[in-house]
Image 1 (cartoon, each protein chain N blue to C red):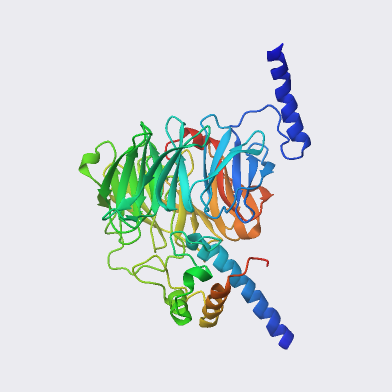
Image 2 (cartoon, helix red, strand yellow):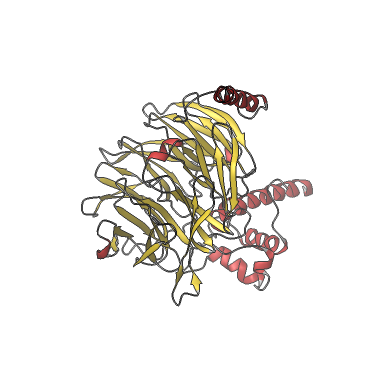
Length: 394
Length: 94
């Protein structure tokens, strides 16, 4: 009887939430759900990528400038990392905040462990990483990014999950890559590798093996083979801009959300209107593709046949599409003013693009390039879909 | 004519507020409390002379991630931004 009551109570709770006007969500899966960050208003829109609609909005997430999100491995919860150090666990089905903690003064994103049990935040202030229980958001490990004589703490960038509940990240101020093993969260083990001047972001390859940190203070990318960490980090793509003066960089490129298509990795050149292509076998530069502006996000469609690129101010009204077979730009689109981010549907037949200054999210068909939908959103920035839950480095 | 100028200036100021909040904000934070870049709150800037802040906006700071904005901003724009930063920067639409 008691069990029957519970079974009856659950749909009733969903119905109630529906009546409140916030969550018209019945019994359903989450594989085609996602969130759009509405950064000016501190809220997220929960979206359905099949119906191409906004299902609900959840408010009260704080300062969401430069916010990002990861997903629980059951695809039900989004963990949203805010600039103000807020970490918010959002229930996509009930369209409400499940839990929320303030974990730092100034934060830049996060990652989730291979087993889904740890959510890890990367912080500017105080510089370091912190791990939280994914269920309760209780702090389970605090790893300061101390460097030099140990008195200073570096801003942390590029945090990425590695197999074995390890996390790789880079220290902007210290010029290092670090790998912290959180397989026993009570006793974190950290190794440091000199990387180069001012790493500004990082990514891990789809297999979880190579961690790459882009360098701002010098040309090139630092590469750590995490299967053979004893070899240390080495520099790749160091010569691509030799002798050329860099353009002013009005926005740092983002490496996260890797663009590895087949054997080739596609990376934004910093201070140049180029996408760089490197062979993941030997990490040598194979091509420089001229594009419309300084790339910010360079993202591969899930099948790897296309790479989509957006640009820094003042070229941020454009998006270009590279065909990975020919290596050429095959399409130039104008989705709207101030394009900040793009996200592919799980198998890539469509892409969602946020146009901040048009207050809209535009959905394109990736084969015909037709506009499929335009959804209203308040200063939209990051777009994150639940299939990220199953991908290393997302 | 006077009205026309006032309207034009108001529009430029709105553009500058948006640019500072959104584009400077990508490094300094939308609330200007800092990020990869330094905080730009009145408290954080109190000790710094306005002229050197204007120079930083226009010419950047070599060796750091701060770019020169002179291709985007006039000297007058930069002076207006610095003056408003020192007093507490307006919110968008505010």
